Image (cartoon, rainbow, N blue to C red; front, side, top):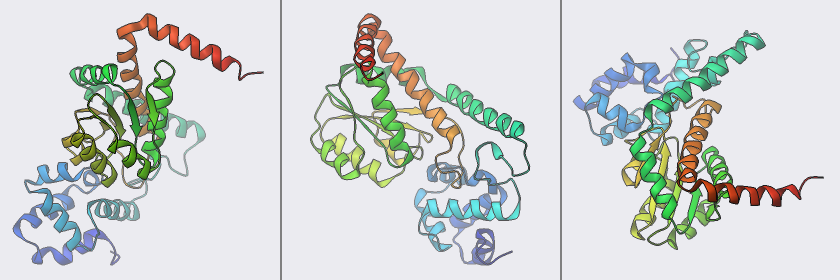
Length: 286
């Protein structure tokens, strides 16, 4: 086993760990593949320890934080077994035919939709729809690949409503959030629900009386605890997959559900606005 293998590091450090940290070590070693998909809150709950224990455990092993620890787990698993910890969605392999590849990707993305369908709570969709319907303005935000999804959200809603605005730069997000007030809404997309930018924006929104709708995979994440309403998307994604298409399909499905929920409350108006937008865009075509 190479020296940088995370499981070798766990083995070497085991007898220097606290009792709580040994619980984490035992769980991680026994459920190696599961661990790479878990949030810090999920792992803490599974081990019966505090999140702070998970953070200390990760740092004791030489990782800067929990995300670095998960990446180390994924890399160690990938280094041992072909196809495990695969960075490609659907566990696509070099030896697959094009037909096999298409079938695997189709299955992975269909599974993401089915997981999301099972996780979406109707009451959460209704609450989010209420907030968006009454909002003075809605800022769509995220970071990295999630920001691309936030731009998609703003584009989708803007075909029927004029109050949705994507804010891409993290500094501009802070500036915009600092000027919100009661009745305004932030629609934030974060697969992990545990980025520093999300937490900063969430605290700003709460301080100013604005609402935060969060689309995330992890309903027990730090960001989710600060949100007005959480919409959960499905699909497990390892750190090596970084914004997989399957995860984006799941998020797009949630956005489509949310858009449809808001539109159906005044379908005639929605149809009229979309016709106006379609007429205006027709001038863009030759």
